[in-house]
Length: 451
Image (cartoon, rainbow, N blue to C red; front, side, top):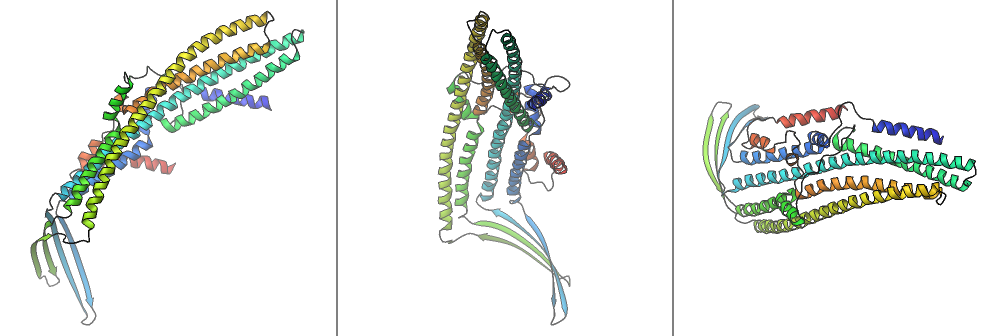
């Protein structure tokens, strides 16, 4: 039963490691695929387009409003029906900048959401890098574990042969058998890790991995921790969004203050009854608040408090960005040290294994000593695989902490989403406009619904 299960696991491992036809997939391919087909990016782009429409709504509020009404009524007492048609128009002539403020607030919200979209883009790309490297790491660990099983199998056979001729005791055979069982168990765990890594790759990239190429040279980051922090303070989307929040809060104060001022509006009315008698009127109205029980003053104080909170939020955002850069820098430093230490550990473990095998051949070492030395080398090689992967991911994590992990900065060679295109199409509040991105999203949602 155990042998059959192990055989099935081996077949599964071969299937997992099988490469797709054609050339090996590169990290750039995976990143481009994640950028093009990320549902999270599509979702946030749609939310950004919805915010663009708020600007259009603010512009529309500054234009004339024309409406009609048809009224029909029946009077039972006289058994008569009357019908009237009204056509009315109204326009805000002057509101002391309130409409303009509303438009500016909507525009700042759009710019803030654009920064949020950059943050989402960084999350998508960092997840793709991590998924790519985790699949490579898991596949390499599986390879090491498979080689270890083969090696211990040969060691066990050699010990059994020596036992048959009386050179070693049954204890050494049992030690080798136990070590082989442990190695097979570790191989099963490694294959499970590979299967999970492939599932994460599919979630991050959009499909299962084929044959993955070694990653290219890691992109440049910064020469020092302070230089990295300086870039992050200028470029990170969280910092830029926090600055937008302060500006929006200041505009909200101006809006609350403008609510105290009057509004001058014009109106026109054309009314026609069933006897074709028409009534026409044109008027101007000046309206404004006199007393609202302190609500207007409260609104101004509230807006000022929200501005103070936004300023504190900007300070907290800077601290968080600085901390994230520092953490990423430390992670990269530790990963580089781990790579250097793993190289030295592998070199020493190989020398030690050769010595232990020679001493065992001469009878001064036991089978357990040889197996321990082999395990030391395996652990060192596995540590090297993990450290190299961690170092590569740490570089991209530092780029994300600096605000530079974008398709444009990485030069992925894919059409970069332009949020300005839809904004320009609707900012003047056209009567009818269809978004190409919206149609694309509709097709994606339709496909998901059918599946």
